[in-house]
Amino acid sequence: MMVARISADGEVTSSDTIRREGLSPAVEACLVDVVKRARFTAPGGAGSTLQIPVTFVVAEPRRP
Image 1: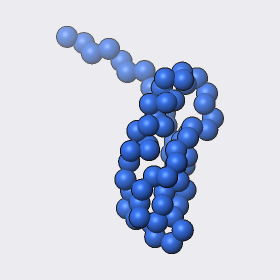
Image 2 (image 1 turned 180 degrees about the horizontal axis):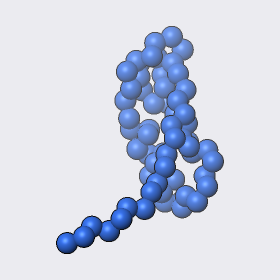
Image 3 (image 1 turned 90 degrees about the vertical axis):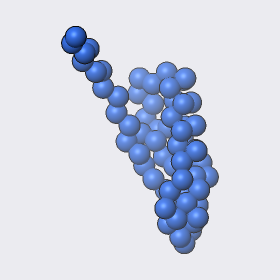
């Protein structure tokens, strides 16, 4: 699960992972970085806080 704080103009002011179950430090850092670079529709007011669920699944190999 990710949490992102969004300013009134839609800029991400902070991003972090919560419930880090099974994530390597490298994957966690990548997710935090991607969310920090995102832009959202301006929520106005005092901004907003988003909780972003993240699920990884193992893909089936492609058959030729």
